[in-house]
Length: 159
Image (cartoon, rainbow, N blue to C red):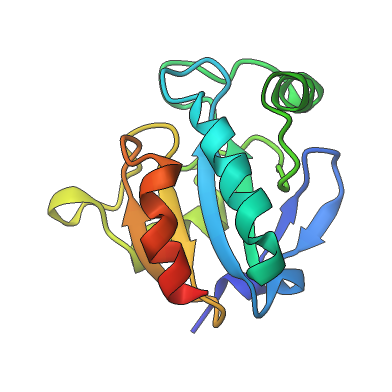
């Protein structure tokens, strides 16, 4: 059976990253967008990362332009926006598709491991979050409206 550690993904800087470097870490994987009503969640995601990284949490951001074309920029523009506007220091990756024929393989696994509302696999909007335990297992899926601050108890439980 595949785990998230079996995947390689492209960083926002264009480097291939083997997700096995995150073995034994708790991961919060989020599809992001710079021009969304939920974009302000970058602040909370960065706070979670800052507050819990020494305990083993890593937030992974995956920009996606599939919802209302709210991530129109290229990787350089996204990186600059995240850095200058929200002081994002958690790892960010290249733009991907999270639904449809070109769904990134990592997201196929995430969606299959933790279904959404009414058993749907489809990602409904930007800032859907997946919590992954230290064994690389998806333990929870959170909707866009769930703020990063609301995840503290769930994160502390798996840390």
